[in-house]
Image (tube, rainbow over all chains, first blue to last red):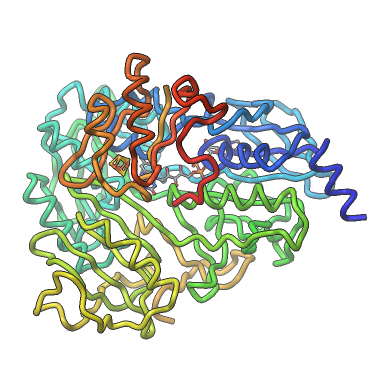
Amino acid sequence: MAGDYLDRLRREGRIVIVGASLAGLRAAETLRAEGFTGELTLIGDEPHEPYDRPPLSKSVLLGMASPRRTELPHRREIDAKWRLGIAATGLDLAAKRVRLADGDEVPYDRLLIATGVRARPWLKEDEARLDGVCLLRTRDDAADLVQRLDAGPRRVFVIGAGFAGSEVASACREKGIPVTVAERAGAPLVGALGGVIGAVAADLQTENGVDLRTHVTVTGLEGDSIGRVRAVHLSDESVVEADVVVVSLGSQRNTEWLTGSGLGAGPRGIACDAGCRAFDFRGIVTDDVFVAGDVARSPHALFGYQFLSLEHWGNAVAQAETAAHNMICHGADRRPHLWMPAFWSSMFGVNIKSVGVPPMGDQLMITQGSLAERRFVGVYGYQGRVIAAVTFDNARWLEFYARQIERGAPFPVEYPTMDRRPENRQPVAADFPDPSLPTHGPTVTLSGYSPADQQLVFHPARH
Amino acid sequence: MRLVVDLNKCQGYAQCAFLAPDVFAMHGEESLIYNPHAPEEQRERLARAVAACPVQAITADGLEDFTGEPGPGPGQVASDGR
Ligand SMILES: Cc1cc2nc3c(=O)[nH]c(=O)nc-3n(C[C@H](O)[C@H](O)[C@H](O)COP(=O)(O)OP(=O)(O)OC[C@H]3O[C@@H](n4cnc5c(N)ncnc54)[C@H](O)[C@@H]3O)c2cc1C
Ligand code: SF4
């Protein structure tokens, strides 16, 4: 009987979580909170207990916190077996076992995969190895970068002006360090928020003394005789001398360890259903493998049931809670993961927040405040309804717009709003780059309708 | 003590920065930055900040003594992640 199986699972089953970070920890806590008393194992390749990443590019770079002290508080005792500093290297779906790098195998009754993403490294390996070429994803990355910034570099060069790169540039300026930012698109944050908002982000950067270069790509990193980076070469043939280069080109999903396992896992993540159950490569849903956090791609009813990958802190928490709940309950008690996408960032003293899926929007309307004052609400529309909103220093209105998105409220926004400016009565094109050219740092990726992750073109707003 | 702020929830009311200025600070008009590892001598201030946050965005551990509650303290317990 299914009921008996579930009772036994809850009482004495074995649950394994691969990926011991935000999603893994919150899932473990939820399992215990909901009465799971069996054996719980957390496997993580980083040698540290779960820590929080967002501070790494904010308070840590600003010197207000230590890169080594951002461990996440625990909401409760989880009584787990921790296997830290050791990677999972394979999965046997039929035998229900996870293979570890040291040859050990860990059997499970239910498995949660929360292996997240990693920073995309600089593509030329010999250049990536130059001393001074940095990434920012882990606390070790942050510790290294902080040390280099504290050493007073002559110039920092940031490749890629997504949120992470822009936050690094902001911290450098605040510390008085000269910084150059190179971006392939026409402005910072274009992949995430489109060209209209991107132009505001560009002004913010230049006004704060960032040497911003747009419509350029980096063609090469040049080292000196002892292997330290000394200059960056750009596609417009200019050369910028710098002794620290931060590569901020977005992320790659940690799914290689699942190659050949039969799961629907690939470069765009692991496809799962709304209940967080993983699909196999045939598009058939499994019932004992669950997915949560940055590595997941899951369909969302509010956004046309396309698969969404969200590199959002709040999504990792919410999806982990839902996955954990669904892992140990009956079909009828399961919940769908219908989280309203929400994101925050902070740069140059401005608080940037968004809800919904901005890259799906083709039109944009500034419903409150003004772009010039850098205090506004921008609402994105798609096929006649509100699909997303972004605020610059105006976060208190966001909740209202989240409800509008949930209700499928009509776009353009016709009702009167506080602080509506006469010049903002009509929507304008949101100006996202060609969706077939993925930009780094969209933070939300729409990846079509196929759970099998086979076509690598993705379908945002216009298809 | 460890702490984390759910900045999706945070409304920048700055109560925490007022009550525990060595742990929380406003950065610009409405962004909050904070030290995720508060030193022991901040215990009382931190507990007050957690309790005073109008949207319960702060989760901290190791504050049981101040609230009389077992477990995770007065911050969110089973949050919806927003
Ligand atoms: C610098 C920085 C700033 C950020 N700022 C914000 C922000 O302002 N707002 C926001 O919403 N989000 C932000 N984020 C994103 C947020 O941190 C992520 O969404 C969140 O960490 C996702 O959690 P996760 O547990 O899904 O994945 P991760 O945190 O990536 O954790 C996955 C874990 O699994 C481990 N792992 C991978 N492969 C294996 C394997 N084979 N075996 C064992 N373990 C493995 C990894 O090493 C890692 O520890 C930021 C991220 C970074 C790096
Ligand atoms: S008191 Fe709460 S809402 Fe206000 S700034 Fe602090 S964390 Fe944010």
